[in-house]
Structure formats: C-alpha cells, structure tokens
Image (cartoon, rainbow, N blue to C red; front, side, top):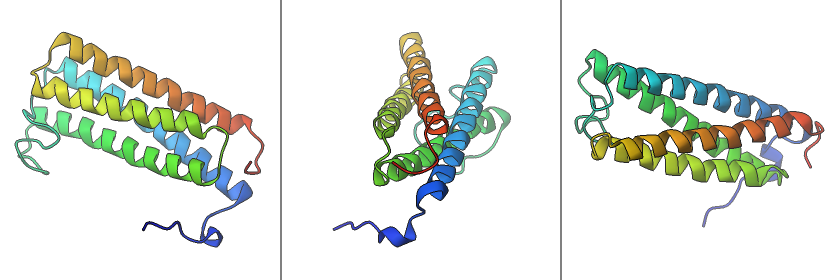
Length: 159
C-alpha cells in the first residue's frame, strides 16, 4: 500500500505556494521549449529521424546525427514537462488546492498529446494525427497557463 509521507515533511503555507508557483513557471517555460523544438523538428524534416516510439532506433540513447538529436531533444524536453506536471499534480492534490482540477485536466491532455505524438511517428506523420498532436499541445498549454495564473492570483497561504 502506498502511503504519503507524514505532513511534517511536506512544505506548508507560503513555502508550498512558492514551490507550486516555481514548478508551474518551469513547466510553462519548458512547454514553450517543447513547442519551439517540435516546430524546428518539423521544419527540418526530422520528424521521422526516430522511426519508433517511445525509444529511438530501439534505444534509450540512440546513435546521434543532427536529425536524431533534434527529435530526441524534443522528446526529452517533453519528458521534463511530464515530470514537472506529475510533481504539480501531486502537490496540488496533496494540498487540496482549488486549482487541482485544472492541473489534473492538464495531465490528461498531456497524456493524450503524448500518445498522439507517438502515433505521428508510428503512422509516419499523417496530417490529421499531426494536427491533433499540435491541437492537444495547445489545449495542454492553455490548461497549464490557466493553472499558473490562478496560482499567482491566489493568496500565499495554502487553501
């Protein structure tokens, strides 16, 4: 059975808000980096440089060429966003933040968007799936920005 650590180990009040706000800003900035990198991957025609997903050429660390490096960087940045989002969801849920439903929705959108990203590679870049991948990325970004703005508009004390 998974048991949360005792509340004494978790930051409280103003410290929790600072941590949530910092994580939210990092996740938002990282999401912009993922989108920019994804656009660059597309522009450079490197979308199929890694012909499988989630690995690249069946490896965690693929043989690097410029196209593979571009695609792999896009995927690693996306992984960093996912890890930041897991931390945000866990902390917001643990602290019973009123904004937790929005960040949970962002998590669902990110999972959907990541699955579509995998399908774009596995299906060899069909335009409809690529558009859906980009659309879910925008929905995810909107939910994340909404969550971040609400965190900065709320009082410093945890609700």
